[in-house]
Length: 87
Image 1 (tube, rainbow, N blue to C red):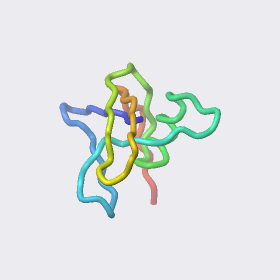
Image 2: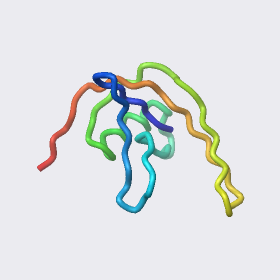
Image 3: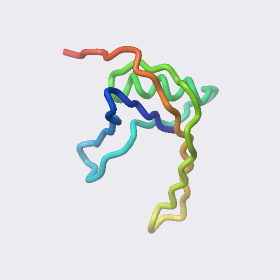
């Protein structure tokens, strides 16, 4: 699932050092975790922000070329609550 953060009319995207593309911040569900818990946890772990989930936005289905695999992502509008500065 992914979170869409819009601040001052700009959408936040991220890019891993090993990737050649930009994407919405996202994550994977851990055992017994709700969708909302996953997104809040992953936003904090991956990009250092605390968010509040506002509402469901859309579903994305990705079919990976060269692999027999389909990924489905539930994407949500989020509200930025705080930015965690790490030294």
